[in-house]
Amino acid sequence: MATFADNRKAWHDYEILETFQGGLSLNGQEVKSIRGGRINLAGSYVDLKDQELFLVGANIPPYQPANAPANYNPERARKLLLTAKEIRYLIGKVKERGLTLVPLKVYSMKSKIKLEFGLVKSKKKQDKRNILKKRDAEREMRKAILRG
Image (cartoon, rainbow, N blue to C red; front, side, top):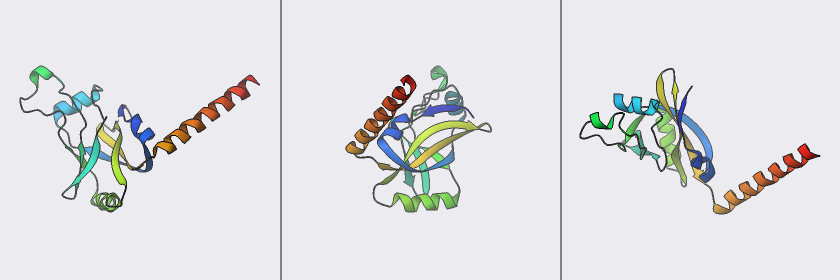
């Protein structure tokens, strides 16, 4: 399983409640571009439109810019391929207040390009600070134990 892109900022900014995986509906040059590691998930999100889920805001540049079609849009919305049961479950969860869907990583599984996304709740600024303080304290304890 090769990982092509990670959204590390999502782990810092959000509390991830559940993770899901789904296929991405892509055209040929987008697949080649992703396999080359040229995808950016920064600022992207998963949106619900007409009982379907779409990856919005992910930037996939053309594989060969000189040969790209004239109407190619690198930030177009890409459909997520999930089961109807999963989509119904996610629709119910997203309608709850404060929950959203954020892409976490893009990877390959059995020659298919998959997207892992999470059902997330935004963290407060104080929560982020507490986590950083806790991480620093744990690091100091490990250093003290190794020295000691």
